[in-house]
Image: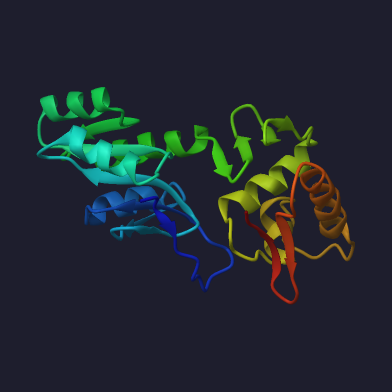
Length: 215
């Protein structure tokens, strides 16, 4: 069964999350310093901003990898094991990264952050590659300009959540004040046109709340 997405969020300016079955204050602090939140993982539900999974694999790493991928998770997966053999088994089984459970928290956080930065984001037929700065829908390149891609990437990282105009100005345009223009609306309109030309509507305007990207 595919992993479902939990959509109930209160905050608009949401940080990406690392869902984990490991409760570690030092790892949580190291991840937060890199803009990631360590959050408990539910058995079959992930929130829209889950960027990676960090799981314990002290016993059977191949089983953990197989079970996780079998449930539909295709994003970055890092396992922590109790010995070198477990780390090797995790990598051989298809984990994106693995380390000893007593590895320095800052190292674990750095490696996870690197995976998150380079991992493609997929939402239905929409695929974004942060490294190549490219976006396609159902195999068709969208030909986005740099600011359009930055806007789409920010919304995709918060998929399913309405993001206010002020938040977009701050995080996509780097503006800490309201310029009094419709720059956000203009870019959203252009981006929506490019997305809609390749399929059903994905970029929605939630009145009084902001802009939301969803499949």
